[in-house]
Length: 106
Ligand code: SF4
Ligand code: F3S
Image (cartoon, rainbow, N blue to C red; front, top):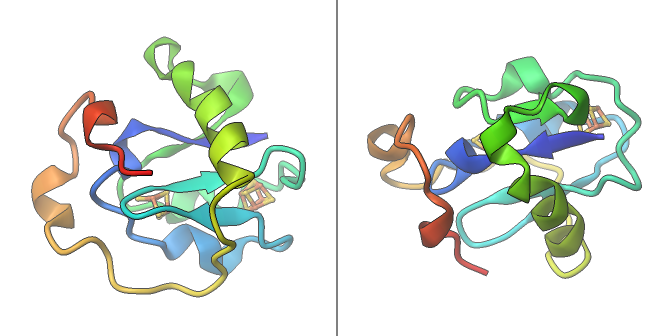
């Protein structure tokens, strides 16, 4: 599956959801996740993310491993999102800041 990782937190640009052919993105307050059981590995979403936050699980940076479980777990509790909306208000400020996990709202 593809995995949404750290740099999505407090950015949440949502460009990714528009291209997913199986609508497998789920939305929290300041982060999105992909349901790994629904993702068909088409790779369409990866280049759409302005924050470069989406990776194939096979190419996941080592320090992003925690997001594998987070995508799986949060996809079970968060609502589906299929249409782009405004990014997080201070997305540009947070884009590129490392280790935003402490800012993840559930
Ligand atoms: Fe959707 Fe394809 Fe991205 Fe998986 S890889 S989340 S199926 S767009
Ligand atoms: Fe997040 Fe990138 Fe989608 S910032 S909401 S994964 S476009």
